[in-house]
Image 1: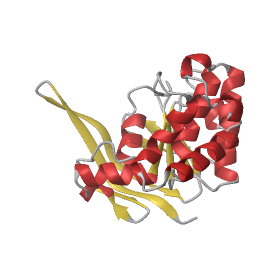
Image 2 (image 1 turned 120 degrees about the horizontal axis):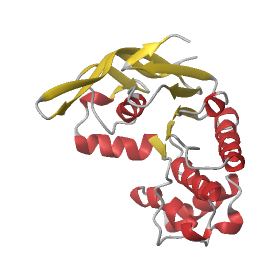
Image 3 (image 1 turned 135 degrees about the horizontal axis):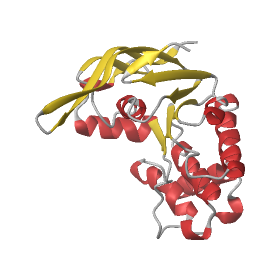
Image 4 (image 1 turned 45 degrees about the horizontal axis):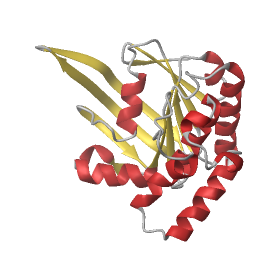
Amino acid sequence: MTPLVEIEHLAKSYQRGGQVVPVLTDITLNIGRGDFTALMGPSGSGKSTLLNLIAGIDKPDSGVLRVDGLDIASLSESELAGWRASHIGFIFQFYNLMPVLTAFENVELPLLLTNLSRKERHERVAMTLAMVNLSDRMDHTPNELSGGQQQRVAIARAIVTDPALIVADEPTGDLDRTAAADVLALMQRLNSELGKTIIMVTHDAHAAAQARTTVHLEKGELKAG
């Protein structure tokens, strides 16, 4: 499998008071194009930090980080913002939907940064909401939707721009078992049917079992198995 994400000797630390706190140490990892990878580990292990580095939200202190052949660590902040908008789809634990907007309007938001016409945007949004089985809820605001439906809106928003990579931070962490199973099944479909590369941070072994590959982090280092 051709790597979509290539990481070599990556390190990241943060300043806390007068102290330098290492978060990731000498991470080397390839994630294949079309893979569905779960990042697991205890709280504080560096999972979300690694996800944020891969998604271009943060920058490493040292090491190599390439996504689809591009050294994203070398990009400026404005270049990174443009790159994220066209290449990365984000799924969060708490959905991050705009409460005053309908499901349709929330999914349309990323497309407002593109050159698509209004008609093209609306066609794309309708198609994407149909893909997540929410065509009958497109005019509802988030407070009129269940947690599982809100997460499916968030997934539709993440995929509407047809990104190369989907990053998900605890996407089932706020859902009951039934809604979580629905969301995981949808993510499997995105991976198997649409060939989307997905990297998912999770504490949940059942959620991780739905992925093709599992990567374990502990105290900022990769662990085998």
